[in-house]
Image (cartoon, rainbow, N blue to C red; front, side, top):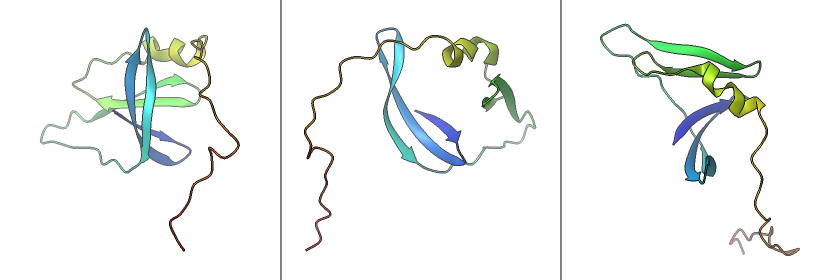
Length: 96
């Protein structure tokens, strides 16, 4: 699970490994508060692309440049789309 921020919203995204890549399995709106301890090592920030920045704790060995291709390289092939029907997107609210 990773905290991600985009378009001003914080989301918790759970990923699962699928063959050679990660696939998002769920996403929830949430809030994150940076943890600050006694030692002022703080949080590090690095730019991955023009639109993507990554924040991590100073004690983690993160190389933002190594993640650049993940955002700029070719996308992995998608599997077949799940079957759907015209009513599969309808939901009921339970109100009567």
